[in-house]
Length: 205
Length: 312
Image (cartoon, rainbow over all chains, first blue to last red; front, side, top):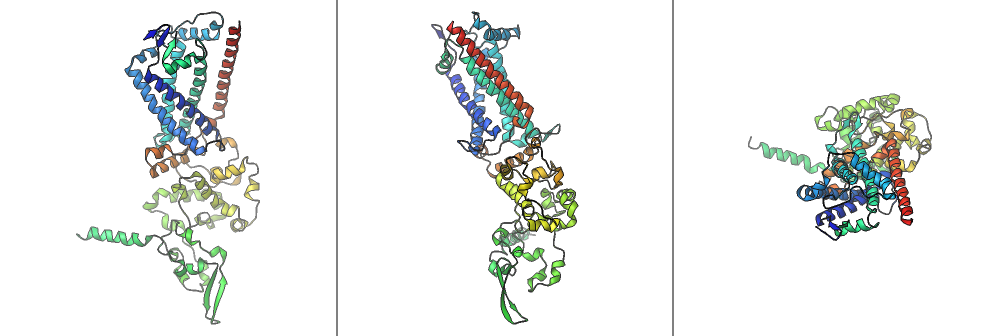
């Protein structure tokens, strides 16, 4: 669906998923950092921080199922297919554009269209985050909620520790992803254009 | 045979009905507690034929409220103390008779297997307490049989578990009179000895003494091998770093315990236990800071270039 330089990129289910995900992830990051830092004095109690983290984690997990479901059963999945040809060259070209080309009059090497919702760098990052990092953070989170599922020892290192470190490391990667994601989103027709798109569904090309 | 099951039920009832503090419900009329729960006691002095009132030795006063919530609430005094104590004045020789020890009842009994008394005994034998003071250092030096409760197993509050555990240590280590019973010397207070410890008050409130003062045994819930002070953990990184001594067993235990109490989905979500992750491993913390600042710097530089290009 498109009209006058606009493409309907983000169907309603995807926008709802994205909205819940955005709020949930921000809550998880804030509460997660508070738990790792062990601040006892803060606006809300430490116990409440843990409870909020638990609730947000479960909501994000259920929401992730919505993402998987949507991506399996709608045409949205085609945007995640990686072409083997120039597997590394394509994202490198996009990175070069961001780092150098866009300041030297180069045109975007992979302009978005109805067939291409993500540029290669974006696609690779989304695949890594949504199909590797997020599942790992969910699995390790389930492990911490049900510690009887965790191995007692793995090579003489406590299983709880390994699970906690995995959870925390993946959470960290998601935080970095969020910062970069928000920044890259500001590189559009105008700094706020892409933010409007994810609310109303229409992307300017 | 047809009466066998009803008979069993009747026997169970006979055991169960009077089992809640039946001996201590009325301390004022209990043979022992009418004196041993009071500051003063009265008796008839046959020799002088007078009624006398005297002060009770404070160390021999029993707190009947705590007695009724302890694990041995169903036992009468003379189940462990000599029956001859029921006469007054108590015979002096009674003081020299050996007292019952925990293992007299708890060792080799399948119903207590989960508490691992034999393993605890092995650990205590290795501990500085037993090494220095021999068999005189009995379980009761730390675990008061009158009031003992299984707080570490039943409490849902880590703070309460910590307080309960530390109180056992402090009952001697912060009380010179009791301390001199086993050591014969006096020593500096716990606060002064731990002067080197940063955030001392916070540590004392949140960490059990035994976390640093015992050799950790993975398969024993509470380690009983108390180490000599020279071997105690003094390096912050032992706990605040990789493979923390503190986390795994207590986290797992508390989590399962809370679920046993409230297994509903909401109960599980309100579980207050947590475990710190990457902050336990300094190298990961450093790497994460480098990545964070690199990403941040990259964005700032990119923004600056975007602004410059736009102005052109």
